[in-house]
Length: 171
Ligand code: S3P
Image (tube, rainbow, N blue to C red; front, side, top):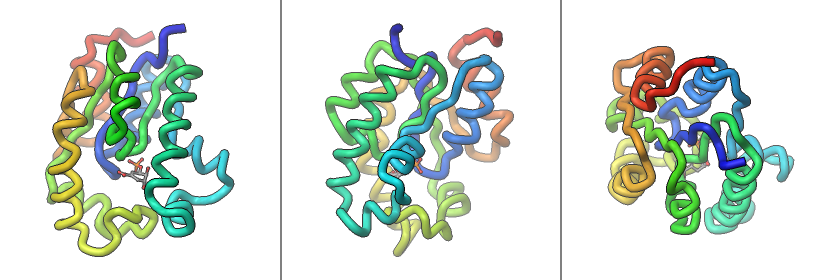
């Protein structure tokens, strides 16, 4: 086996889970999400892991979860928004079809601003978002084989744009 058919990366709230599930359905493969893997394995919410153990402990769990999923899963895989911060993870993505779902700051605040389950945007969403993206944008671009903007698009439109960009035929 040679890894997932498609990997989705991009910031929190951009729609990786929704688009990932739609892509998996259209391609007739399974969907997997590394955040869900961590929650299932740890038996607690991601926000709780952040509060109880801190971000670096979460990143270590995330790194393991991503490595495992990349080795095991051959369908559509969505990665947590911060997983590309890890250089080893970025190296593991090379040679795979990686879609970067992008969005601008206003769309991000609209989609994630009031979501308390997202610990990284809890205090000042707009400012935190800008800082987060300044640190990460080039990393998403580095691992991506295609970039699909999501602003003003429905999940269905984003799914279709991803299939078109990847030139993947449906099953
Ligand atoms: C994070 C994104 C979240 C989750 C955690 C940290 C990040 O995943 O892993 O809250 O650093 O961007 P989603 O991108 O699936 O929301």
